[in-house]
Image 1 (cartoon, rainbow, N blue to C red):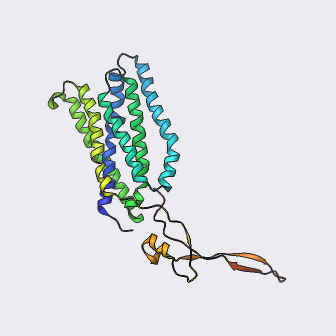
Image 2 (cartoon, rainbow, N blue to C red):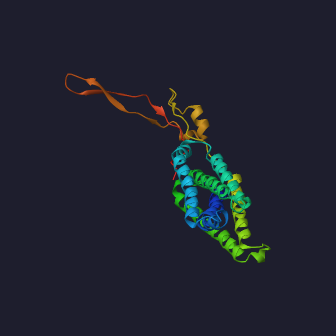
Image 3 (cartoon, helix red, strand yellow):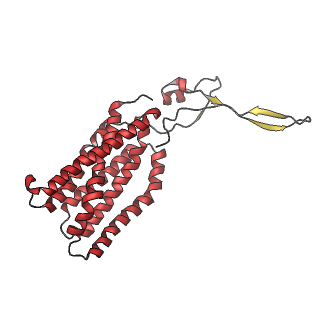
Length: 271
């Protein structure tokens, strides 16, 4: 497989894009802001229960969808489209938190659940695209590149948002609450902006090709050569034998099954 460095860069940069959601929203601002702003006036126990409800709903949805999404990612031919669809859902839901008013915990919880589903769903198809952009021997390196960019990108935007929250006046904001809400919007914009390289630089390969019988001449079939693009990769035949009965001396007779030509599938198991 010939690697495309631009495709590798575009793939890895998506980790830079969506990790901002994990650092700024999931791990930091949302739990605190939910209890102090969207669930304001509620008993601390009640507000904690509401936050737990939102997390539980998101976790259950992701768990129910995971087997189906995994099967689609393994065998489907639309990994990139599914990735972008879930990413769009996560981006829209995360950005919508900016407009949720004070005390609107129901809307905030709904946005968070949809954002979590979008984030988790996009990761499934993001991981499955690794086999498209990297040769087998280089997948560990490319995967590590994505992880490193994810930690770096998520940390950079998180540090900026913390600065904005601690010094809202420096950014022309009235208070830290407005800074936190703007942080959610910044995550959505960051996620969308740095998803563009994946959109334009990563091209998905087709799915597995069916097996086709070997022509009588023993040469690769034209359809196989056309699908693979390299006639030298086709025409590999396999034969097997089976006992067809016993002779009087106890020996067995064997006859070969018809040879079968196997075309390159163009796909590998996902990592």
